[in-house]
Length: 363
Ligand SMILES: Cc1ncc(COP(=O)(O)O)c(C=O)c1O
Image (tube, rainbow, N blue to C red; front, side):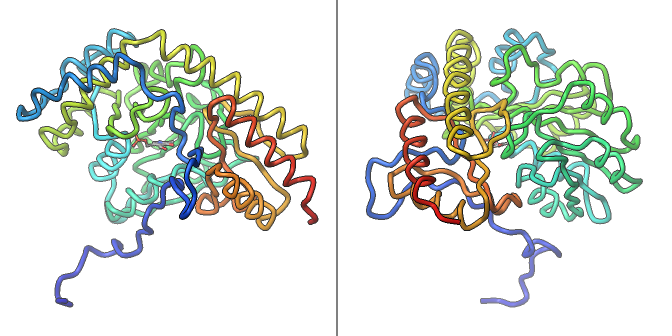
């Protein structure tokens, strides 16, 4: 191998992203509760739209994502011209870092924030800065204190992953208003649809020049496998981001399925309601058996154990029962497990296994 071919400085410092477990060797019939996917899958309309594309796979997809942007605009009331679509919202996070941050610049995110903020900042050659949270909640004062003349991007997810917690709109507005003028606030709304009546802070985007919102079809819409996300921001920022995306960055199947999923509002509402029902069941039962758990606004709960050893043992007990959840050590939460809200029967099994685990656990 040639030793003369070298990556850019800092690239080899990027840790490989490890996704949620999807299988266990030698075990069949496992239930994946490790990646916050929709256990009910996408709407029937989305599946039908996906199948319908099969006859036209030789044709390049729409390069301007027009029909999808129109569907998003019609359902959300946002301006279609200021919507940009992407290959998962991960791609937008990457574009934002590529465009707005480079060597010498700082990219802020919260202590237990989504890992891609750090990885994309590093890929752009910028300096990632993790800012402490307050009891697993985004701490606006800490973010404002950490921002300086080098800060170019500030990422927060609201609600947040993997904590499931959410801060108020007024706190988010205070953050937007208090940042230095060269910094863009990125509001990651991957879980926004799980909060009834919440627009992901689109109103803040409309009112300000320094706020951008990202959204995904991977969570409530059940289309994680297709890789589809979108963003909404000031015209100038959207226009700038278009310059770095590939001309056909979203494939035809994703465009078609995403459009149908977006328009099937009744299905989205049903998923939100069913999720909320089982999420509250899960949380109440966990609290009942002595496992700490913050109120969650998402499609997962963060179970907090007494120690890392206890979380590891609980993870093993769940895995032995075929229930795959997410250890979140890489998020600085070694004593926690993130559990996606599954179908009712699976939530009940999680509770049963954890109850038995707790009964037998000696600290
Ligand atoms: C907070 C947050 N943002 C973004 C993403 C990325 O989503 P996508 O599948 O759209 O790339 C995730 C996925 O888990 C997430 O949790």
